[in-house]
Amino acid sequence: MARIFWVSCPECKKKFYASNDDFRNQEHQLLCPFCGKRFLDHEADELVDAN
Ligand SMILES: [Zn+2]
Image (cartoon, rainbow, N blue to C red):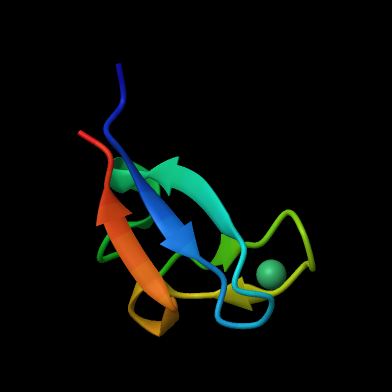
């Protein structure tokens, strides 16, 4: 199972999860499923490791 983390969108503050391998400390932008905001992990409002 892929490792995931919870992330809070800096725009709408809602939480969703993403894969560590794909988005943690990567240059891949996360895409908020609620408001469509794109941002990098270090721009997130909050990061929480889920496992
Ligand atoms: Zn958002």
